[in-house]
Image 1 (tube, rainbow, N blue to C red):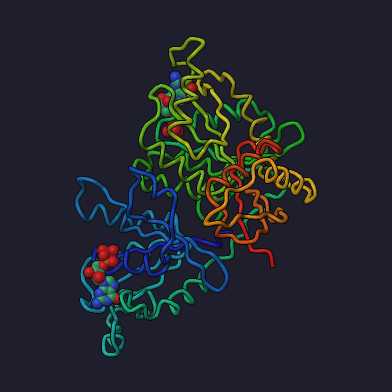
Image 2 (cartoon, rainbow, N blue to C red; image 1 turned 45 degrees about the vertical axis):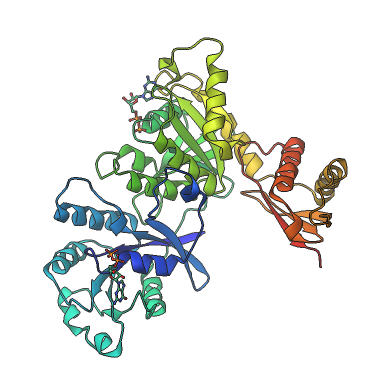
Length: 435
Ligand code: GDP
Ligand code: GDP
């Protein structure tokens, strides 16, 4: 559970990306391992005092063919829009420069808490030299050094102090879903189409301290939230055409959802950018439904649906568990299938398998197809236990986790899916040494 968002802002070369990397450490990401995915990250997570925060490096969000001042303004705007606490970075080595003053002015006008960090304060004399930064009017400057990793704890202490208490609405017992996809795939049209069918819209709800607006409705006896509908409606107004920013936005929405509807534009077919979005949905460990939209404008015969399904499976191999729905947000065709599908997926995400039933399935699987010996040693699974849901996570107690080969893990996963379905949800399987 993410407690809040921290954005790093500052003119180029003050050390934003250095600090960002120092804060998030090395984290491997499936999204980044896929070919064609932007390598330089702008988003990561940091843990401080047992709480998780997300960190945004606004320096990585760039505008093409725009003057430099436009770009900085955009970065500051996005920080103000997305963050709960903003960290403005300046450089102890260069002192106050005019761009610092311009950024500080914009930040002062926002209502967000701002912390001023003086980077490159690598030694004692540079650390003592931070007084001139009081001129920026952002309170006490905190000396840090990204390259020497000094002062980062003090900085995080201050950040956490300013982190607002988010009264996250309690969404327990409610199914939250979001609609994600490239610009123009039909996200807002689909949200409208779903809501048109649902007579009993409860309300728009202030989501968080950020300006996310969620829409609540009831369907039969269940309650739903569409997460961050404002983000969709406001598209175009602020920088949503910048891919990195729309990805960031989608990531935030997925985090707050149980199920993500990942939209593909049927009129255009699958595009490279779709893969980034799909990767996000998969990585988050949430339920995923692939929605092939604009089905009305696809020229089709009785083979088309199978052909497209095959193509989707090839392009998004890691989403092999996600069901595919063909809809038209415009005409409303098949949109009514989505709510039952969302129910089915959410139920799968939260399914708990009784331990004895689970053990029967895993031990049967092992008996039918025993693991191949590796260097003369054979994996042995003694027993299994489901340790959590969303996503369903299983621990297998074994003789030696090193012997739990990827292909055997895949085999066990398939057996669990055969036995229990788990439609639309990733499942995690962990091998642990039996004590
Ligand atoms: P950004 O443009 O704000 O993201 O800045 P970078 O993180 O790319 O850093 C710009 C330059 O400053 C790089 O050459 C870094 O190695 C250097 N730098 C970053 N942090 C420190 C620091 O704490 N001390 C010193 N001396 N150099 C730093
Ligand atoms: P968003 O950017 O993902 O929110 O996409 P919009 O909902 O704004 O839709 C982008 C464009 O696609 C608009 O012109 C819509 O009218 C059109 N569109 C959306 N859904 C459908 C659909 O199911 N069929 C067709 N033919 N057009 C659609």
